[in-house]
Length: 52
Image (cartoon, rainbow, N blue to C red; front, side, top):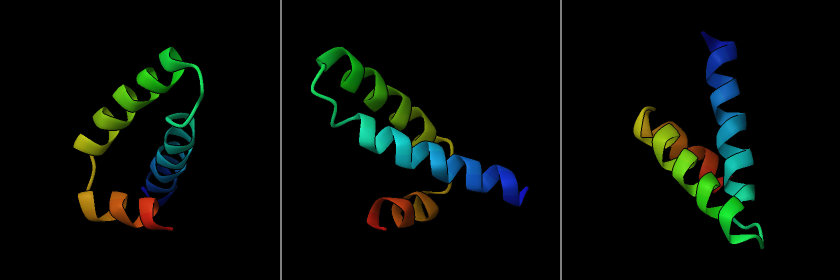
């Protein structure tokens, strides 16, 4: 379970970086995926990833 939680944190970090892409289609898709991931996980853990 810990490995899966760490994987989700890595995915969130990567998606946060991709949302800043200069190609609008890429950043929009990343934001859509990020919204889905954040809605299905513990918001406090997600927040800790965003802050760090």
